[in-house]
Image (cartoon, rainbow, N blue to C red):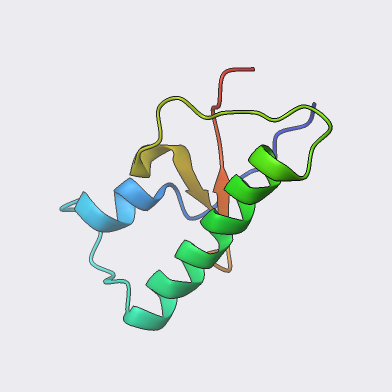
Length: 76
């Protein structure tokens, strides 16, 4: 499996990091939420074998250069 580089760190970084001066606006937050929901739906419903993520938290939601959410580190 190839892991892609996520240039915008994690959702946790954007929500809680003091060094990060950027604030996520409502539009960005909704876009991230939508991407996260699509990722979970894929893992739970659209695979031959469902994958249940046992430890969801903002640090496991990775963001690419367009702030598209990717679910990471689900321990398979």
